Image (cartoon, rainbow, N blue to C red; front, side, top):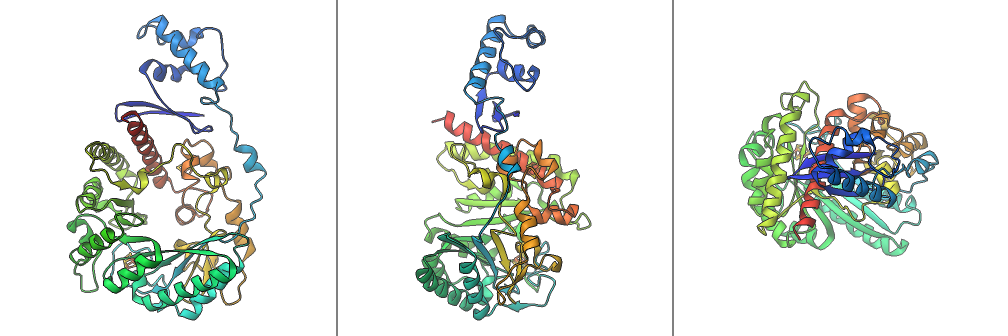
Length: 457
Ligand code: SF4
Ligand code: SF4
């Protein structure tokens, strides 16, 4: 399977199964429209391929391009067979738990309009995790992580800084237990920044391998959606704190993360604004919300959003060329190595490798499922998890999803977000269409950026 498109003035051809990416000339780019799979090498370019091209290109060019295509095919870089199908058919994944998302606070000091966490309540009452529950969660992950050495703990909310003493207690306990059980814990915290101070910053810098800082972009964009109980915006409070934290981490191992909505479909300007504030690690993602919300993105926004990704791509390479580059999380793609086959097929691991734990110790497939009791998998106090739910998630991969089978993005996207699929289509194996459109575009942009960088070296 191949996928071809034009971006940044380049003709790009992806060979889906080998992962090879080619930047080709116009003759080859056009020729590929007339070659069907499975490809068969012939001595000279077949007449049905020559015919539609002969008025535009000379014979020699056509023959030369055809020979190049044959060469790439013979080298396993074009029209390659699906080598992943067998892995998927014999899929018998026996996973261990590698990561926990600890909801240390189902409470928040902001009232963001789009909050999927129901402004920190997750549709239950407001509550904070006790250190006892947090420690039980650490015991749980140690007991369920098999021989795995590295374990990730994400402190999440609501707003985790509202329960920071407990965050510290859990962290110290995990480090202590890690030594006893030969586990290396790595911590990440996601915060809205309101409560950040020097003491918290120092602790985070000493202990957290990553920090996610929530901000949506310009003051206007941010404060329209991210405000306090009294309606006042958060931008002026958080920007200096985030800038300070990012600098104190040498502009690495953090990212500022925002959400764009129907109110700022022109979100490229928000990403650029974050870069202009000095942030080198950025991420801005489309909101996921029911169409009934005034800020929801719907199919009528697709064209504009795709054009915004184009705009961002242009600016991204321009800044990179001027030595003022920054990273945009969704444009980061590794064309040389990429993740292993299993990861490419099954994605984030929600429900089996990655689990979320509520303040009460209840276990869910991921933070997005928290509060949907049909997906409650157990509790850290009894230490067991529902194997039926676990297996359901474990079995899910790009080959169990009809829509993904024919999608060129499948080995980068890995089948999309299970929670979005369930919430929009009632089935974790039926991807959420709008997210697919954006995902495919982002992949095209990121591959074009990498190709552009390589060519300009
Ligand atoms: S900061 Fe996060 S948890 Fe709090 S209201 Fe905003 S989106 Fe929800
Ligand atoms: S973009 Fe959509 S269809 Fe394509 S692999 Fe991802 S989830 Fe599947």
